[in-house]
Length: 106
Figure 1: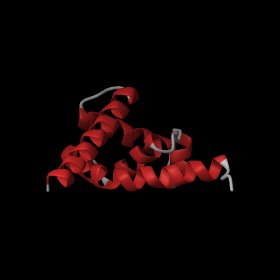
Figure 2 (figure 1 turned 180 degrees about the horizontal axis):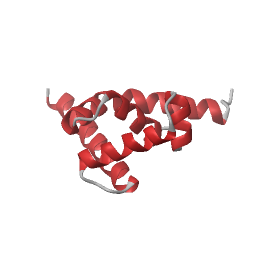
Figure 3 (figure 1 turned 120 degrees about the vertical axis):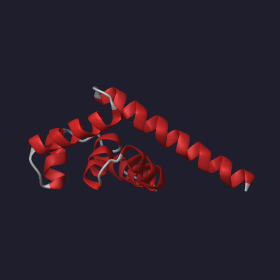
């Protein structure tokens, strides 16, 4: 049985979010990212949502989404979405690699 592209996409997203959860908690704690800011980061990084889609999903205004993104970037000391995603993905990969090495050595 072949799964539809939408179903494959949803399963991949669920897998990514499950793997990201501990690393995202660590990232958020390290950079003092709020729960709402973490939610917005996930919607951008995993789902590729636009500001409008994030606003609809979170039931907030687009201006509030932009403010949250600006706050995240200020906390991280960066000024572009590409740098934000690069930092987030690098941190996630480092955390996953660290966890894998810890389970091998332990």
